[in-house]
Structures are given as structure tokens and as C-alpha cells.
Length: 305
Ligand code: RRO
Image (cartoon, protein in one colour):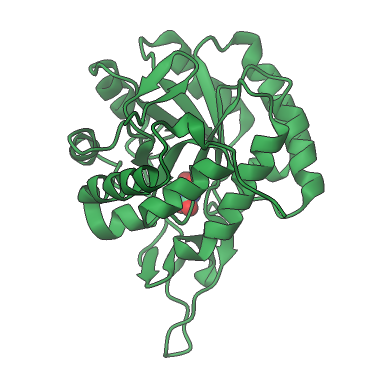
């Protein structure tokens, strides 16, 4: 059985990797994923300089998922870039910044480095006070991408927030189709949710308890976003599916909707990196039952009524 995935010329042994933010803050954590059954990893989204992030508690999980308002804590671009430059294999470097000028600065830095993996430009962090998610602003996103592709020579994709209206999928897909983007990663957490505990209190401190939702709560929204973009994007732009992956069946469903790679966030936080082996085995079991030998045989083959 062949579980290989290709994004442009980059080949991966199987579709599984972590979602940015989970188990990817330090080199030790990244090495743990590298030594697991995951085919690749993505770094914690980083900025030009180190950031402490928001006040704690800033992460909470229950049986249905997680809520976070981490606030982009990271060790700065140099830390991740130096590490990645020392590795063979294809990995993902996630980056963002607080304004477009600094996004160009961080991308210039990557452009000039010897990094030769994939860059995931995060346009969807929901947890920085006073900084709206860039990808909800279509005009700014369009201009940003137009400017980036004037100089950026490496392979780049974008991490998107969830959309909830078919008109918004149309608008965003029309923008993305204009540029040589390698992948679209849908979805980031569902922004600005609230979870309340038995003491009538929010469960995280920043922003009065508002934070990004992940886990089982968000699978239907994630699948819809993956499928909506799969139907609209030109076929050179591959979809990475993220959101609500707990089992092999969940990976199978993301691929049915059109995903190439599939990322695991909340469940990785709970189960640690042994999650990849379990989920891969479950995926293989499903493929065996259905007589599929490769992911290409069922990718995007979601049936409708
Ligand atoms: O660090 C965070 O608060 C964070 C980021 Br950058 C993101 O993209 N998504 C998220 O749920 N949390």
C-alpha cells in the first residue's frame, strides 16, 4: 500500500504531520515529531523576534476539543531557520508578523537563507489583540500576495481561517488562483469562541476568555473548508486539511474532501507523537477494507446526493 503524497516536487511518505502550534515550539519537540511516524512537521508560527505570548492559563482542553489564546509565543525566526537549514528532508516553516511590512521582512530573510522546504504563511492567527486575522480582509490579502510574489522565490502556501459563507470561498479562491501558491492549509482554529466551566467562568485568561477552538468541535467546518477550496482552486494548489482529526477515519474524510497532507493538532497535544502511528494504522485498515492502494484513488471523491 502506498500512502505517498506529492506537493509540487516535494514527496512525503504519508499524509500526516502536526498542526502548527502543537509540539513544535522547541527543537526537542520538533525532533520528537521527526522521529515519529509523521511524514513531516511544521514549526510553531514564528516572528522576527522572540515573543512571550499571552498570559496563562492560555490553553484548555475537554473531551470535545481545545480552546487557546497563546498569543504567538515563539523563539524567533533565526532559531527555527538555523535548525531547518541543518536538516535533510522536507519540512514546513510557519511564519507571520504584526504588519505587512514585517511580513515582507521575514520573507526576505527566508528568501536569502538556504532553507529549501515549504513556507506556511499564517494569515489567520485569531489571538493577537487589536490585530484582525489578515485573511478575513480580502483586499489586504490580495495586495500582500501580489507584493510577495514580486520577489519571493521559494515555495509558499497560506494558512487560512475558516470561512462560513460560499461567497467568501469564491472571493478567496479567486484571489489565491492568481498566484503561484503551492498549498492552502484549511483551517486554523475557529476564532474567538468561549468555553465556560462549572463555576460560570471562562477557562482561559487572555481576552476575557475568547480563544481559538480546535478538536472534534471543528471537524465539520474543517471538512467544508477543505472541500470548498478543493472545488474552487486550480489543481496546482494542493490543500492541507487541518481540524478535528482524532482517527484514521477523520484523515480519510479530509482526503475524500480533497486534502493532500492532513495535520493533527489538539489530538497530538493529548496523545503525543505516538498518535501518528495509531492513526496511520487506522487509515491503512480503512483503505484495505475499501480496496484502495493509494490516496489518489479516493482523494476528492466525496459523494453528493
Ligand atoms: O499562538 C496562537 O495564539 C495561535 C496562532 Br499564531 C494561530 O495561528 N492559531 C491559534 O489557534 N493560536
